[in-house]
Image 1 (cartoon, helix red, strand yellow):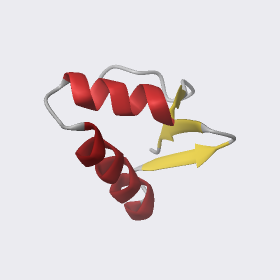
Image 2 (image 1 turned 180 degrees about the vertical axis):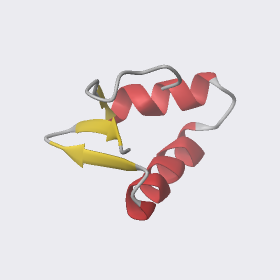
Image 3 (image 1 turned 90 degrees about the vertical axis):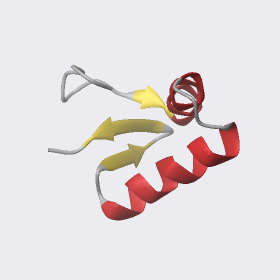
Length: 53
């Protein structure tokens, strides 16, 4: 989400697709998103993801 506005959100599926397009396998992309959520780098609410400040 380089250059994304802090208020922008994307779905978990879209984030997985973007990571897969960047070279990650889909299961790896899903795991990466889960790690980012657990570490607080992104927030998830109502099926949308947002970068944290």
